[in-house]
Length: 174
Image (cartoon, rainbow, N blue to C red; front, side, top):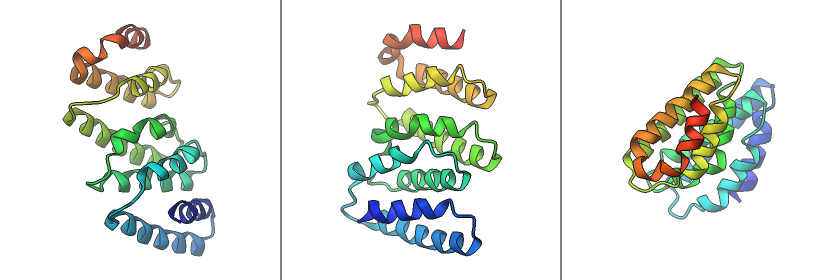
């Protein structure tokens, strides 16, 4: 049922009417509370819903999605790093948004993930490095700088695990 409610909230997040936005935000907070307190939340079943919507261009919908990603990441029992490839590229696209608030919110979420990666022992770097290599050539300077910063951090942290990606990374930053 959560996916259906989330889909409805997602659609309402794009509405410009103040009263609709206020009602949506109230229900949104309640749903996040329910998810954070749930013993058996099916994150594996929910992540495709996020992935299907991550490339939305509406600024309100983008804030809604980043808010959900951040909320799910704050739940101790949910390992969002495992699901990072589902929405990672979409977050990097949001870094080029004209709205400074969206860029700042997205940047904050991305760097929380980078902090978590630095604390983990096992990580599947392949899908992450692929996205970072693409965005290190972005026309948007902020996106490009963020991608290169991530690549540097991952190369430092991942060491031997990132050797297979050295050619791609060097090509991306040179």
